Image 1 (cartoon, rainbow, N blue to C red):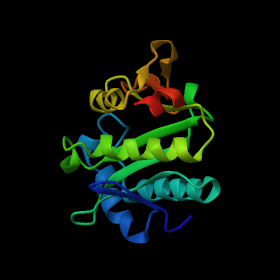
Image 2 (cartoon, one colour):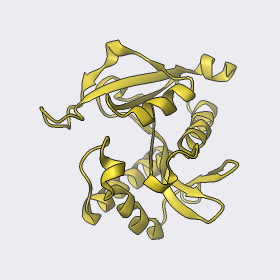
Image 3 (cartoon, helix red, strand yellow):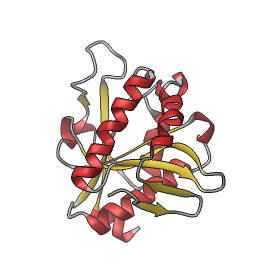
Length: 184
């Protein structure tokens, strides 16, 4: 699905390019960005992560796409839809985002996530979109709430790929039903 793109007023969600690897590695190496997501990543780990999301796009036609600011063509992170692979979102349409620290607080995550949800409900048969994050990730939780997603405390879980005792292990789950999204 190379060449895929969604345009918003200020952003472009698109397929990944080779030139995206270095700026994405810088995002994943920033302790501020990774504080609520997991350990900082070196270039090898970041490249392996991009290999996985590119394989997801090749297999399914969607992924966590590269997120580019159109004003300056800067890669500012990722946003998109994958099939969840942990806890209550396993196999479900999961929306997610990761943004560079200097892109925080400008509404980019919400704008990109809205476009991703529009795409999801226009192109996939799922009745709901799901999102998970570490319990303490208040910034992402605020984005989920701005999107009209509903927190379900009964779906809180310990992420199976995060070590016991790690403060990021406890995860929360949000969702928005197709019918609710279509009425927003």
